[in-house]
Amino acid sequence: MARQAGTITSWSTNSSGPGATYVIKIFRRTTDPDSFQVMAHSEQHALTSGINTVPVSLPVKSGDMVGLHESGPNNSCTFSQLGDNVINRAGDLANGTSGVFAPQNDVRLNLAALLVPDNGFSIDGITRDRRRGTATFTVTTTNPGVVSMAGKGVKKRAPKSLAVAGPVTFAIATTGKTKHKLERKGRIAATVRVNFSPNGGDQSTQTLRLKLRTLPPTPISSP
Image (tube, rainbow, N blue to C red; front, side, top):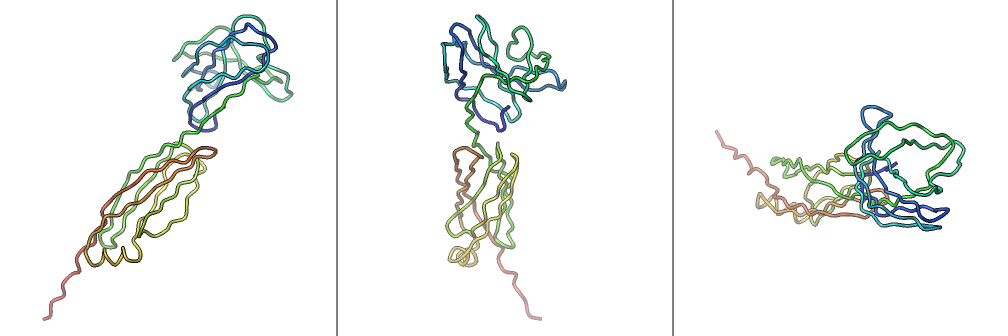
C-alpha cells in the first residue's frame, strides 16, 4: 500500500523462471470494502529468471494498492509468509473498472515497488494586518513532512511538522532595519522562501513576494 502520494518509479520481483508476463496496476478502494478500482497500469513485461527490476511511472495517492495482473507460465508471484495476506480475483480489469477481490491468507506478494514521494505544495490564504504591518499565509502540502520559511528582515519561525498532508499557517513579521523602514515609509516589499520536505523525499522551494503596509499614525488635535 502507498503510504504517501507520489510516483512509483520502478518495480521488482524475483521470478523462479522465465516467460510469465506481468502488468503492474494501481488499485483504489471503492465504497464497497471488497471492491477496488484500477487507476493506472504499466506496460507488459515478460519475466526472466531471477531478479527483474523494471522502470515505470505510475502516480499514486496515499492508500492506493500496488498489484499485478499475470499471464503465461506459472511463476512465483507469491510466497508463504505466516500472518500476511493478499487479495486476488480471476480475470483482468481495465483502467477505470472495478472488481471484488477475495483474501488469500498466509502469503506475501512477490513484488516490491519504489515510491518517490510528491513534494508539491501551494501557498494561499494570504491576509495582511495593516495595524501591525504583518501578514499570514497558508501552506497546503500533498504529503506529511516538514514546512519551513525564512527571509531577510523577517522574523525566524520554527519549522512545522505535519503528520498528515494538509494546511499549516505561518505569520510574517519584520525585524531589525526592515521593521524600522516599514515604520518610517509605511510599506515595504518582503520576500520569503518556503520549503517543504516530504517524509523520505526531496525538498521543494517556492518564493513568496508580498507588500507589507502600515496605517499612517492617527493625528491628535488639541482642543
